[in-house]
Length: 381
Image (cartoon, rainbow, N blue to C red; front, side):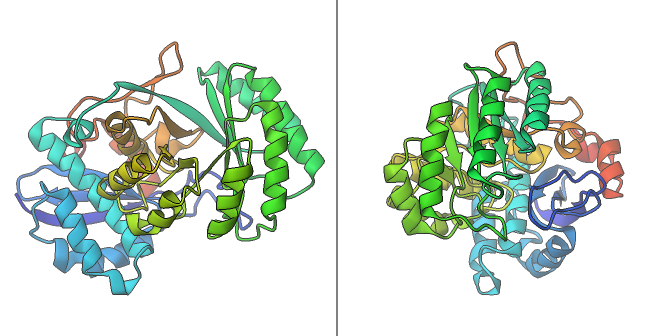
């Protein structure tokens, strides 16, 4: 079997808010679908956390390297792409694009072998996982109303992030967290994401420590991205001093970038994003490294249905990963997966055991948001 073509399809006209200072619009493209075609008619799908124009440019650079390659060897092929393009900007657009290709290659390998990706990664520790509803923070009253609606959908874990938190006043921060805890109830998991990778983040280590001491009063499960993403030494101090677990890592790419953070225990919880870190091949290595260094691996999932599907497979094959992020209200998650994401009465998601990523795609929804039409054969499982 050989790779014959790879196409990119940018998602638009439904892009959810990101919480950034320079806020994205619904028509902006920040997520791009990848479709890998083969000479035997098997098609794999992946997802990239990057604008489609950048992805298409990266595919032009990568095309001589992937054309006629064997799609049944995702880890080798992806490493070939990484090592032959590092001088063009390791960790940027090309790395993000390889992420989507790698996901699609694992999808193809699963289809050909008749196995879910999680089993091909070494075995499934679980067949269901807890999704946490991930939403942006708002004014306390509006946030509480939104959380009540999400709780009624069956979620039992929630993460609130960005918005006014850390950007208005300490009093506002506490009002937001108090409203959230009261809305979700005492038994739900509640996480707080400061969003310090924001371009205009201005808070420092002392703010983060004082905020962590406030969060523990509301039984917050973890404090995510409380510091600018490159401040390794501050993260080390904060993790050692904070009464709340510290999480981060969503902006890092490739395993080499994660090494000092994990070896020095800068995080309690590491959160690589499969759609930009290098794909499933790279993320499982990071998960192993995290386990070896006593850090919990819970993937970042503010992306698409294909990113969520990859996270579910990774969670099934990772011994300590019992949660995944679920971006609520995004059509790129809820609509392009034809069967949706039903939860059971315990607020858990079933991890698909069908071959590959295990999901079926709604091609009408994909055409709606990408403007591209794919055949039924390309979405068949």
